[in-house]
Length: 414
Image (tube, rainbow, N blue to C red; front, side):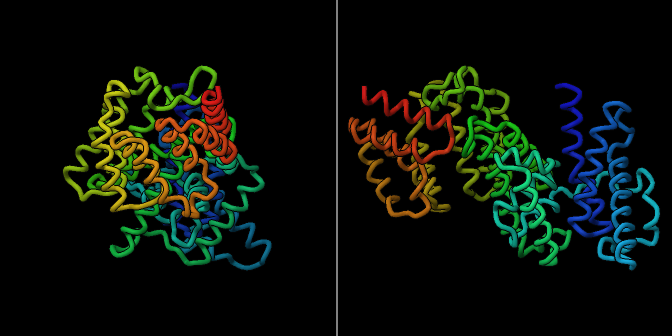
């Protein structure tokens, strides 16, 4: 890892901690978050030349606090009145805190910040953007690039999310015992969305966006450190590790998509597989069963098979049947249909897919047609499979998926 990469990792790790300190001291999410971003920018410019300070967190807190105080003074001068909204209790507001005066060094508010960014008053898209910006330490430009949209479009989305948090009076504190399960579900769902968008980009020229999968895993590790006994947190981290372990084998030298059954398993990351398998094994034996644990168990069965032909499809079918009962959704049914086809024959899988034909959530989704085409191909229905591959290619905005699906259709035509 290069020096610049180590610095980037350090700043991203410290960003939510510094923001937590400022929120505790001053309040005002939008103002504090903007000040932290300015401090991170200052560090990125100064530290490579001057060296990393002895206490980098203290340095960032000091600089961010000064930026925040400057904002308050500017507002005071403009409005000619004291601005108390940005500062809860600031008898020494004219002075920046001394280095090291940011509170207990072992206290990390990252989990509290994640709960705040995933507040139920925000839309899922806003939760994802705000989490990447405030907790992940990404700049607005980096968040915009991750989702292939202009910075001018992403900036208002993040700004509206921060304003919404302020409007609903959300406080910087852990949810109550009654609220916490639902709020934790939202946090895990946001991290899951970030990972999925990175692992299979919904649009654009690349199949992967490694910066998103890496960030999702890093943030999920933070949550796991804070909640080591939560089975679903461990299950999600395990699922990410077992899935991302296959990344190097998912594309060929030309960037073309390589399906799971055709991947070179020697390219899979053995260390990630070992860690992910240990996590899901421990969590399933000690915690109530949840959807992320089940998905991780399925992923473990896939990566444990030495060859595609050795995959334990019967066990995978059983796990999908359980998952369908406890967390039904159309994507689970799609995967369940594949497992049924591999154990009961392609016609049985196609019959299961018929239950999704009227589901509005899949009306314009390419995966339904892609899975149907795959099962039709297995069943020898080549003309129908060719047409469904072509339809799936028309519906996806991912260029690698388009090329793969068209290639499958072309092969059947020949």
